[in-house]
Length: 294
Image (cartoon, rainbow, N blue to C red; front, top):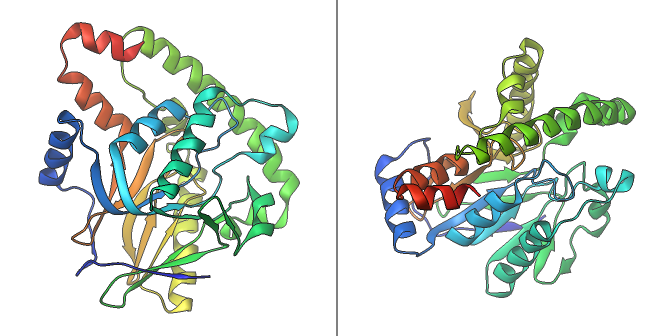
């Protein structure tokens, strides 16, 4: 496990910075990518129909960073073993990430449970992308963030993998419904909206699981003596303090289409990219909005 040094002067957990958003939108309007010190992405699930590859490509084109952390479940090996699905857009995502690495972005790939086969290559480098089981992202004042996928805290995945696979089948059905639902929205010129996430976050047991998971991850960070943790796995973007530990979950690119970004002033925030695209589309003439939706 390697430590990544940063160059900012402060680390402030915050969700919303209207002036930052205005700055990003101005850069987008000038066709210039927004620059960040670090970007954290997880749960992309390339190789599945639920992967929102086009939205992710748009994000990658419009955002640059010194450090890019791929925090697990980038490729869905579980699904690819059962049936092959790999459209050009998924290949484009991989090529874009590799291009960033070649141009100097420090790319660290931390495999998750769906791409667990890559864990055998930890501490090796492939095409300028370093594979690690976990990482430490460090700020200049010495504060440290543990970066892990987080599946080790999910009791179902850890102790009964066959139950997790059954759950994956049910979840896949919900995502297929989500795909059909959003196909209809695109035809109506409406932006992406996750039906599966809406349903999941209103189920009492799911809400309790998310809360328990967040506490377990924060507890491990505290045990290790770090100041915070960045993880993924549960497809629920969040950033909050838990008993003195900064808990950050960067979300996913199947349901919520979110990323965790760290700006050069040290502030961390969650970017909801589908919302950003909807805001941009709302500023276009009607004809351009219709083209963007097609």
